[in-house]
Length: 461
Image (tube, rainbow, N blue to C red; front, side, top):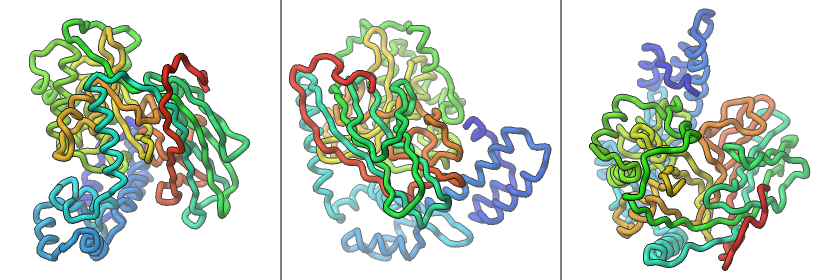
């Protein structure tokens, strides 16, 4: 999607900023009728029609609906507070055709922006339980406990909503665990359809593909099992080498439209790293800067951004994948090979999408770095920040080792998530199926420790 770095023409940008999206669409269609457009500009404008559709979809709440949600979920909320929040610009809204419309997760992001409001909302007991479990395990590893190995059984199920979908035949790509780094084995237990295509383990986005005629009651699901290790590595900076194997060059280069070495990012990297020459310490300085200065907040769908790292570095906020993208860009700028890893945060209680990174440090190899989990927040113990540079818990399902790669088989229409695949991608013969047109259920069925584990039980599939 390199075309995303192509600038839009002035009149179009003006109408979009004013929220006149109907007019913006007209301008695009009119411009596309010209037969002399450069290829990348033409593609960019074609995608802009898609981007506008997604942007409008991402702001579903009217002002009245947003206020109702605030009154219902925040104890003692008042009109005066609403006005103060609007004046402080912490409520995410845009103007669409003259009307204020609020972002789909404006409430959750408000709690990230104003943490004191959390005290007036209902506590998520399940989340608290998971946090205690995670922090207890991290503390044990830091205190000297040996890393453990676990066997995890999990399932994902997507159920299309036929009334929201055009077409007669539907295709589905669901995430499937990859065997790499901390994942020692993976196997398919069962799939909802007898005919399926399981992508090879080497696929950047490992998926299982199925298709069927669209009908009421249709669902696609896959149950799998994988073996995963906790990762804990003690690095002596004095033993770190500054050279890398030649095959790692791809982890040092730009990858437009997002991993771009802009003047701003190059200057930022220089300010953070300074005169440091040790690759491990350079990567650590960048990690510490992001985890101390970038606040966690949910992002729009990534397809709406021209450059995710630049957004994070300019706004100093972003979710797990956005922070990971900034880290990849900054590390590559200073010469540290850095790659992508993502899938689920899958613990014994629940599962949800999650992204993190991997850095290569000679002679230690690939080390995990999780920016958002290592982020400095009031509710987190100090040791959490220290742990997530070079170490990783086993509460993961790894499905992606790269971002913005092709699915197998390739999709015909624009993907809902162009970065990777964590909750599934669907399309019919006539359109992409967006996330609001299907339900997703991710479930961890069992999470068991394996004592004295040796070898790869399941092989490559």
